[in-house]
Amino acid sequence: MECQTKRNATPRVVVLGLASCFGCQLQITNAESHLLEILGQIDVQYWQMASSAPEPEGDVDVVIIEGAVSTVESREIVERWRKRAKCLIAMGACAVCGGIPSIAAHHLDERAKSVYGDALPSACGEMLVPQPVSSVVDVDFEVRACPIDPADFVAVMQHAIYGSNATVQTGTLCGSCKRNESGCLWREGKVCLGLVTQEGCGAKCVQLGRECNGCRGLSANANLSAARAFAESTGVGAVRFDEALELFNLVNPMLSPISEGEE
Image (cartoon, rainbow, N blue to C red; front, side, top):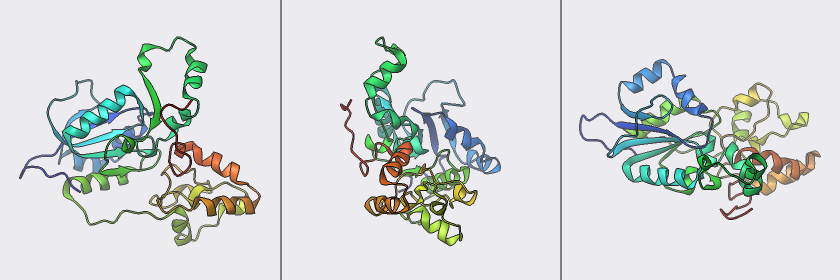
């Protein structure tokens, strides 16, 4: 879909941050000249990282959300902005698939106590198992990876504002490696998650000799049983393969569903 604005009206945009490092918001600024082009076409009514102004009132055309939903307050924020925005963009691994915050999903209460003791600071709010934005509301567009690629952000913004006939990518990263004629890192004993990770990054890490860590999330076409069998056949083992997957994908139902009440 695209956000339909009134004729000749400038799209109103809000950028929010939840449980994250705010690195993806920082990456927006690295779009440089492309960012200037975008800023000339939109009305940024609120940008959490770049402004100390209060959140604007009224409806907007596009809301961009970075970060995982990890508290009751953040869930309410997402629900409120979903109602107020024509388009919602989940930006970065934390917002798209739970990302690094989701590592705390298992035994959440115990992990909190190990950091804060029995007296949990009120600033933490009422904690939830960290989840992607899509677990709370419908998401129209996603900008994947950790951190995001500024070029991906620019492309998604253009799609959101003006519409696009681009198809959604659902293949795995291994396809990109084959097209780039990259050597397989599994042959070097590295646990590369390109077997099951969503394509679209051009396999940049692999091109540099670094295994894919799965930051783009699992592909809808991922064959986990086949991937685990392959990991076993290499001697790495399925357990080590699953442990690597959990870095960014622990709360993905394709691995093992985790309820809010699990401890």
